[in-house]
Length: 315
Image (cartoon, rainbow, N blue to C red; front, side):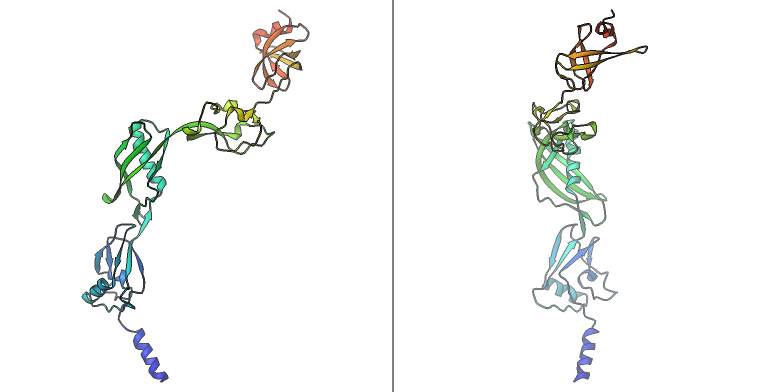
């Protein structure tokens, strides 16, 4: 009995028949071959073309009847486990990144609007586009149309590879105007001072911008959060920050006056509060004269050269 069982095993394992022992096959190239659907087919038959391959990313299901017919036609023994056996043939592909699609659309719409200060948002959330596996293609945009408010667009995308059209699909979306604004590169906590290294310019949706938005980065330099932590990458409002006063009203200050040939200092008293670079009123303690000076540091101001003699009382 043991000898009989061994002989039967050898006969089954050395059979020349081919079995469809897989459910999904990825095919590169233009045709499905016998080798794709019958892996155990002879070397002589493996490259026999039996079907035009699906487009990249598309698929076709080969059912039991079709497999049986092809097997008989080419002399391949097809051993199906059930009559529901089937093979799904998929065109091998790389999915086109949605960012590439949006970039192609934006470049085309920019030519129409003569501006690139906008972003786009596709309505087609399930958009799946494919190029052949490992091969780059072209994304062409045709039939583009923009509504009169310039808030919506429609267009046709055409995917091509080596001059051959792979796919054509209609898309719709929203046009979002963008505005360049200064934002923080990191979170700034209460008590911290904003420096130039903490600021960068970003293109943000114009819908986030209003009359209170800070549009000048110099308004942020030296500022601190007024009440709470300031987060990065978001527009800041004027009421979000405050500029610490470096010169305090009725407090003594040092007045600096410089020219190419002379450098002098004098004692003064601030007549108003002032932050860095502010132009404030200062009274010279000795001469009692009042002039305007620029705040350059804590309780320090600088005067213009023509004012030197006036503030020092030497004119």
